[in-house]
Length: 449
Image (cartoon, rainbow, N blue to C red; front, top):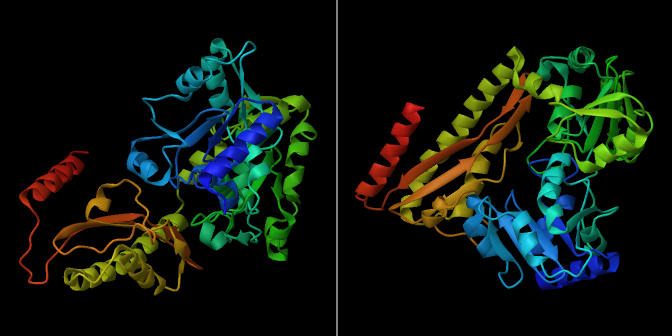
């Protein structure tokens, strides 16, 4: 297994071979997803950082990792300071760091590469405006240099896409596509390109298994003003059931054909593209084909935020089902933790066990944050075998978790956080005055909102 030092050296050798001076590495995939599949965990592979937000920049002589305040502690625990400088966003900027480390570059300026399928058009444009006056040029790559040196990089998930039937969705895909078609007609566009995986799931009433705890299928959609659509998805994900569900108005094509459709079928047409999901690769392909594209909000975003009666009832049912599991867990914790025999992993596993008692559970909402003592103060703490500690009697314990539920009557997803006082075996231990004061202040703040 390569060390992070060896991985960094391999990346630098690849950059040198390509004739560029640096590379930018985000936590991102081609869909601008908040959470990404294992195949897209390039920042984690290179640095060891396991947080959900951040990016790194590597030059031939320097390297830095940029995170916000949520991960100030975590990044120092996971990333070797001898390899990467720690930078805090927004106080530290990528443009400022690049200007500093590239200042000694010989005449001609530094060439900093980026993967055009992992950054939005707006993000790159803003960075270019900052660094170009400093003699730095951003260069889109034709392939990701990390992929060239990541020998055992996982392949994207081959799991089949699943049908989310109309009874649970509360509205057919045909009606949803009609809403999008009406929007396109109103806005004067021929088509809209939809890269966002959750938008695709909503529009076509499909689900997937390609990202941990996120029921989406890796795919793209081009929706047209006549109500038809094209779904670009790996062939192994397409089942006969999915084909029947999509019907004749949705053409299923290989995911690899997506870029060609942007340069070919959409040539000369008016196309809408959401700026939050408009990666440079999509915009470049549309421009190369002669499409006239305009940045506008994805029309499915507001539509899917307005929950129909079926969805509302599904959410109510999910909250009740999940609340029962959490109540059982808190009762168990109250009886077991004061004895000192419960650790963070044990507690998380027990909570998952209580949730699994419901036959409608499909997955957890996210990895359970099970945080004892000082760990409870860490935003987005993720317990593992190395960090796991006992839950001390006479201390604070935080658990942030959720479940995804689905059956024929509907479904929903929960996210619930509870902070509890863990008593002592003799039952005499109580929270300190400072603890009471802090929690009272938080309660008052919530009441005032």
